[in-house]
Image (cartoon, rainbow, N blue to C red; front, side):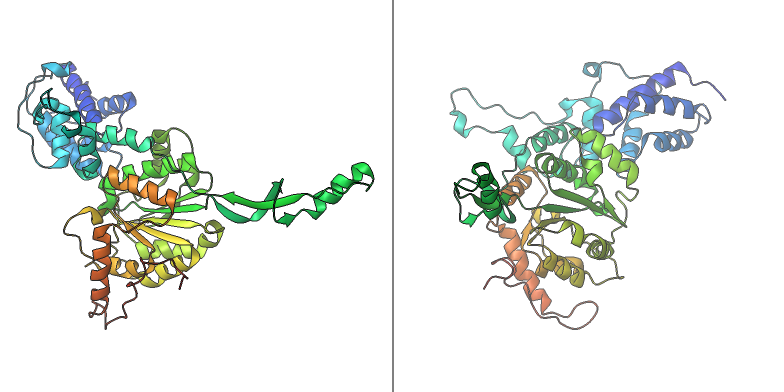
Length: 425
């Protein structure tokens, strides 16, 4: 076991700071583990050092690509980098890849990004450029590490004014249409039945229960963390919220996401859920939810929020039948798809065409504005559809009449799925 040279150890410390600034979740213990692992490796072999550091410092599948890009940019010499970020000189121009741009910004500072032109002082502030507004419209996959931290803060400040709805249970009231016979007799015992004052009850109003099914497969890796932060904010403000994760298996993470600290909650989820950024078995996950969980959590007129891109390659179960059964079990089914934020979106995938006829609402969740619109939709009830979602439903209706990959045509059922509530005339 050979000792690690002090110059190389300094570089490891600086490299860990770079990864932390680029978005990886690393603490001081990770640096100590990396230094201990390097004692068993040949430091003259670049491949061994890269493989050893990757095994110790990467805990999620989506971190591997960012680690490889950071390793290639950082270890290009033998001189340790300065400890102060202000003394780091610019070495390479920013690249269009969002991950690589995030690494270069963490390595060389914000000077690699183009400087925004400040408006003159005499211009009215109502016509000036707003950084916050531009950030709200930017896709999560295109954000830098600093922008992601700002987006996390904005998501944590979202508010959900859920409109309460009447339930079957009642509560005491001063005036109401329901006569409380039991309470009236109980109060009359104080006067031995001489006075009989009427008491009443009224319907109790509570927000409807909400269930979240979030896809955490590899195709959703760029959006998973932000969407889980959105789910955590919703669970903090509401009482009856259930959360499930869909990957190669179905995971109930309601208890894991409870608590005020979102970072601790995500850490617990990462430790228990092993298929983050893995494969997609959407039909199997919905089948398991319908058989084991729907009757437990979809009670009292519950709403269901399905967050997925709909890219399913599971042939074990019929996705359309599972979605139809899920739609019958809930009062309102909202499908949130980050792919809807792209201008050229069209329901061409077989999984998307199978899901569309069985949802009440179809919304994008690719940036902060879309999450704010979703929060308003959950608060105010049914709202007008996103324009691109409406065109997607029309395209899906047309494609339903075309032959599918597995057989003949199917009847178009999604023509009125978004224009009215389920069960209305």
